[in-house]
Image 1 (tube, helix red, strand yellow):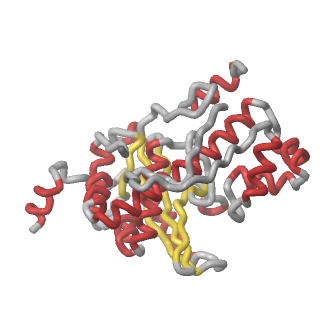
Image 2 (tube, helix red, strand yellow):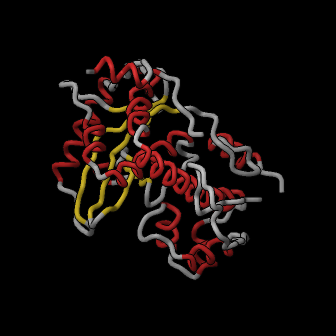
Image 3 (cartoon, chains in turn yellow, purple):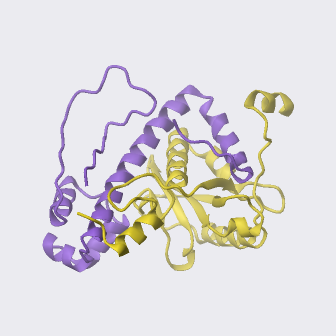
Length: 171
Length: 123
């Protein structure tokens, strides 16, 4: 069946050819938001997570980066947030009765604000027990960080050298 | 192989991930989960693509599945509980698709991108 003009337009937006699913051609980058004090809350959060959770949250954001919305569908693991957290996406995992949430911003405007690619920016994270609300201070902190990120586009910059040299230079 | 980033914006993340992947146990777990995430996303992507292509409104989908429209909206947004296999069967049936599930033994040798769920979409 030939796709209609409307569906061809949608397919182009999704990075597909309208006749089946294919990887998107739009390239996004993953970035860590950096505070004015030089901290990277999302990176610290990930390092504090149990390894299976860190594996899952990183797998989710890498998969989203490689097929960003609208290609990557929302699901239990990649959730579009609502209410006061509208504008955030969260990567989700559950481990040992705890729910782990990594709060992210899809920043398609990043190239217009000094970054060299559209950015899936990891802002910060939160943990809560299953079937309980997230502490409001976690959301408030995430909102503050996002406001600062959108005002500054401040991210962690890489060292730009191979891993073995990074280790040498850091010791 | 997972694509790596070539932008300055993505450099710090790539270096962070590279450091994590240097641990073989992390690498094995990460690659298994990445394959699973991609497989689940592909299933959801195909379903939504076909629903849009066939111009099936969510309300009509709800009628065909004998469910409440709100439940279908939540289902397609990935909210709420994990859909059961029965719900997935009802969903693909309602949009004119079929699931072809073959259960077989895993290969003895599995590479890092192995996933126990394989999606072969012909739509």
